[in-house]
Image (tube, helix red, strand yellow):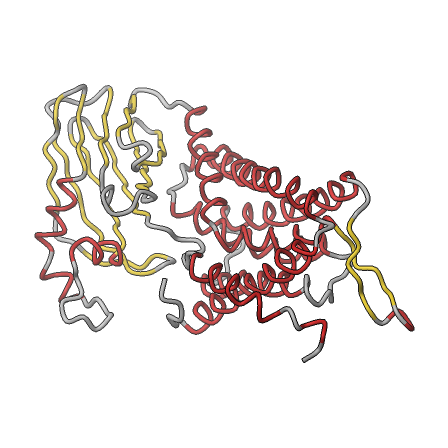
Length: 388
């Protein structure tokens, strides 16, 4: 075996732990979409709940063949309606509203099939303050969120419900624009933190930021890792990368959200996975040497379409589209900067060690590339390769 690669077998336990512990859901964790419109004392709307989540809670796949059919969903309508009614409570000015769930349908979202439950809630009076209590899947998934879109008095409000905020109150007489902005910004932060492919792409670009590849040997045929002499050098490199990525995904996020450019979801998701593979392998075999900011910009354009698919599912208020777009985008940037703030000081301190070069830089990059390659195959060919 080549002496330069003799250390690779020792990294297999590290690679296995990284692959076994990483979640496979890149863009779509457990989300449901709750849409309500108030008209006097009556609220109508719909509740879209992922069939995969309902299967986990109720066991919809009766024959265990890995596929959920319409017949299996229809036969469990009473159970699904009962689950929904038990985990959604609406109160008008402190008085409970009666909730009725209509005949369900099935709709396709970007991440699969959803049960669509028509809702009608009758309140004792037209609410001035509407309290929404949400506890769906709270006992199964602490990361589950309910994305609420509430229309009343000619305005739309958006909110994120879930274990972290199971009870929220909405004043229907007026719209708090600042609250809307904060909600979308918080969702942007949350999305980047659970968007594991975005994180791995960013980390792949940041891993070599605390060093450079210097040409050595006869004819300068060999690239040698050289740690940066000062923190400022690494900070400048990180600034270029993050700025390029931010500019790129901001462009396509805006274009896609405004409906000016659309791309097939599978193409976007597969390309995002491919970008992670290439960025990670570049750390072991530097074919993009010295141009990581350009790589960040080029692939950042594709990542922007991935962000846009999430923002679209939130149910954007048309009268506050710009506010929601800016809030979500700033939230994404805040989430990125938090990752950089944690990663960069540690990487700088370890940059001269053999551990950083072989285990963190090379081993980590190979693990990232392997996981992203599996994501690519799953997304491009609609397969299930990973057991998680």
